[in-house]
Amino acid sequence: MIRREIVYLVDKAKSGEFLDREEMAALFDIAPFTAESAYIQHAAREISSKVSSNTAEVHAHVGINVGPCVRNCKWCSFAAVNKVFAQAGVMPIEEIVRRCRKMEQNGANAIYLVATGTFPFGRLLEIIQEVRRNLSPDTVLIGNIDDFTLKEAYALRDAGLNGVYHAVRLREGIESSIPVEKRLATMRAAREAGLALGTCVEPVGPEHTTGELVEATIIARECGAVYSGCMRRIAVPDTEVGKRGMINEARQAHILAAIRLSTQHEMIGMCWHEPSVAGPLAGVNIMWAETGSSPRDTHEDCERTRGRTVAEVRRIYWEAGWKVLDGPSLIWKSGAGKLQRKVV
Image (tube, rainbow, N blue to C red; front, side):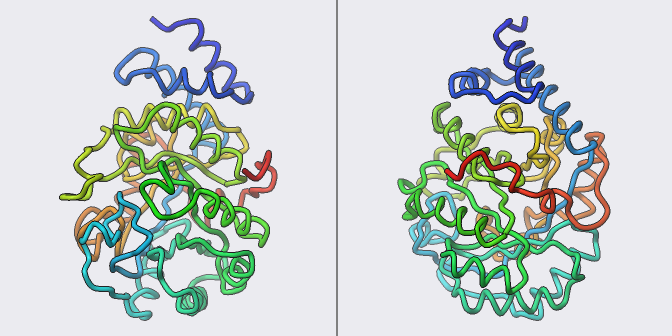
C-alpha cells in the first residue's frame, strides 16, 4: 500500500515543484523492495524520460595517471593512506590521445580526462591542449581533476575543456583532506569562467545517513550543474572504508530515484556509476565507459578489469528501453545557467 503522503510528494515532484528537506528525507527513508520504492522509481523514470525525450548518453572516462595522492580521500584507491599504488605513473600522451580518439570513434557523447588530485596543473593543460587538437571540434571534452582557482578555470577553458565534473563528496573534509568550501569555490570558479559543471551524490556507502543524503542532494541541485545522480562507493579491498561494505544496486536505485524527484526538471541529466540496467530503469540517462586508471580499481588500467566499453553501455540502455544519442552530448550543452537558484 502506498501512503497518501508519498503520493502527494511524487505528484509534487512530477509537477516541477521543489521538495523541502523534510519531504526529501521522507523519500530517502523508504526501504527498497517495497511498493512505495517501486512507485518512486517509476516516477523518476517518467520524469527523466520526459525531460530528455527518452534519450540517454554514454560518457567516456579516460584515466591518465596513477600514484599515491596526499588528498587522502579514504574511499579512493589512489589515497596514499590506502597504500594501493606505491609508484606514480602517467600514461604517455600518445596513448591518452589514442584512447580518447577511440572513445570518440566508438560513439561516446563526451570524453572525460580524469587525473589524481595532485597531478601537475601545467602538465594537465598540455594534455588537454593535445587531446583537443586531435578530437573533432564538436566533441565535448570534460575534466575530472583537482580543485582550481578562477584564474586556472579560465586556463582550463582556453586549453579546450567544455566543462568539469566536481562534487562535494559525502563526509568531505572528514574522510578526505579537502575542505568543503574549497570544493564549492571550485564549482563557482568553473561556472564564472564559462565551464559547464556536472556533479553527483557520491560515494554512497551503507553508513551514510538520510540527513547526509539530503544535504548532498541540495548542494547538487543548487550549484548550477547540468546533471546530478548517484554513485555508490566501490569497496577498495583491505582499506578502512572498504571494510564498511557497499550498498546494493536496489538501494542505489532508490536513492537515485529520490534524487531525481528532488531535482529541478531543467536538469535533464541523471547519472549512475557503475553501469548496470538498474540505473536506467530508475531514470538514469548518463553512464560511463572507462579506460585507464580509476579510483575504484586496484589495477592501473580498468579497461582490463571493471571498465565497460561504449558498446556495452549502449546495450545496457537498450535493455532498459532508452534511446542513445548519436553525436556530441546535449546534456553538457544544455546550459547550466538557467538551473542555478544560487551558488551554494
